[in-house]
Image (tube, rainbow, N blue to C red):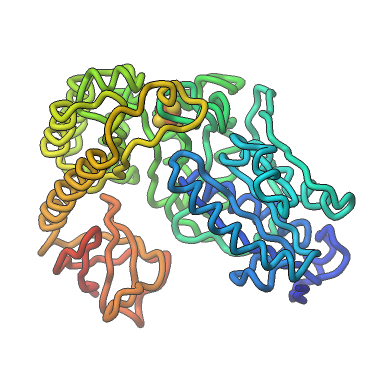
Length: 465
Ligand code: SF4
């Protein structure tokens, strides 16, 4: 479906298509924040090729599903979504259907065989080429697979002109590193996103300045292992903590966060940065995966649980109000009830404010998938339920510690909770629903909020004006 878009004469002159008649792209994302950032990037690249995002599949000329293969469940959801898209393709043969992301990288040709109505399959390293992929389908009408890695040493995200499909929100992601060199035995990321490569600091500073000048107040530095930033791919090596100090100097930036971290690359200097930089928000997502040393070794995490806990003790003593979150896998091959108890003990001891908890499922091509998947499904389910119950209790306790206090909340938008006007995040990354202040507050403002109650993973409170 074509949509006429109003543009200034200056914009029309820069626009690569000669008219302001835009086609419609529907984008769907599964998986992690890296995938969300990749989808945003594809939206931007496509915008410069004459596509505007639609929220209605039925209106689309192009449908892209950016997939995840880290868990079996994400794959199943993708296949079920494509099952529904098939009828759209039948009723509109001009519709282009593309599958991008990690599942595309991993399964490639198999996906075209399984879903012959797909027009193309692309891996995460081809994000910048999305417009070329669409052009190729339009000109040849032939389905194709475009995967493989960019083997160049440099990781660069080219700057496009000032035109943006939409203004950035108050909180914006910036990719600083891609890929992962850790090769944890359960994980597909090193196979789907390749080896680590960092972006040049100057390019990052330019992108952050650009986002801040257009309204972003908070930047979240993104990567599979951000703490490994600067080790590979830069003209001049720069450690991660130095990047934090340099980003913090950018005028207008109010808040800084990063994710995800690996315990082995998380340095004492980064702990110092938390202490030194007021804008570095007091939250850390530090995956532990298991509380048992034998399981950690089988996962190839390359640290012991004692080392992990020592690191957190040091961090907590430097930054007492830091909140912590983590990833946990239960039912890894060979995990006994006693091993699992160690995970519960660590969860209890650390008191995470939230956890992403999963039952292990073997991922094709990973070393762990060659081990016997020895823990029965029923046991995995029971262990998962126990971690969820424990986490809910600890989340409630952590949340209660905010009740009655005033917290600074960066407002991200409207709250969907009845009776509340805005929602945003406090420094510890809790979602906060806010009542009151409708005439004075707006997205992008920082509100002072008196917390009144905890509701699941959210805090609810009233604006103090
Ligand atoms: S650190 Fe391990 S779990 Fe994280 S992306 Fe790398 S290989 Fe995967």
